[in-house]
Length: 136
Image 1 (tube, rainbow, N blue to C red):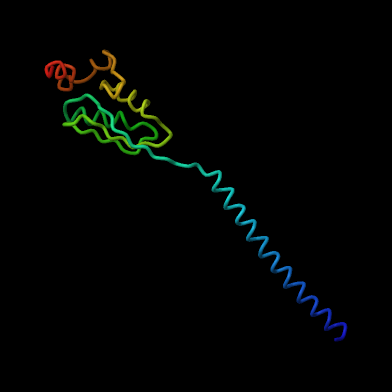
Image 2: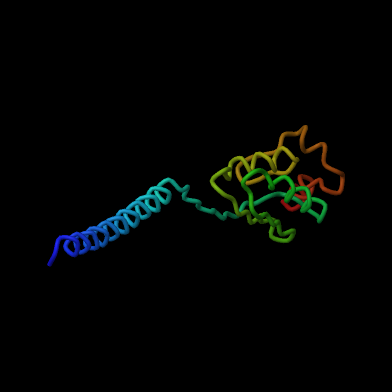
């Protein structure tokens, strides 16, 4: 083999090896970036709970559901007959915050009671405390 042929041959081997190394290096960097972005990604957990909420009518239902929709709440549905609120929420909020928001609207929610001032703001048809005392 003459010198030029040998140089061409060595150049071809060198280019082949560089190409292979670069390909593996790029793959390793891509894998590293993928792993690092996944490790920093926020793990979202959605919670679902049922809360007993005092109320009487469809007007109460609208008020309760609106009060439950605070930041982080994905779904809220109150059943007039069972007086149960099904709420789906993200970690941005808590069940306690949702119950406080509903109580602030005038309805007892879970372990949180509406104040007398908040309760008195309810329309007369929504006076659930009278219904509760009549049931006893």
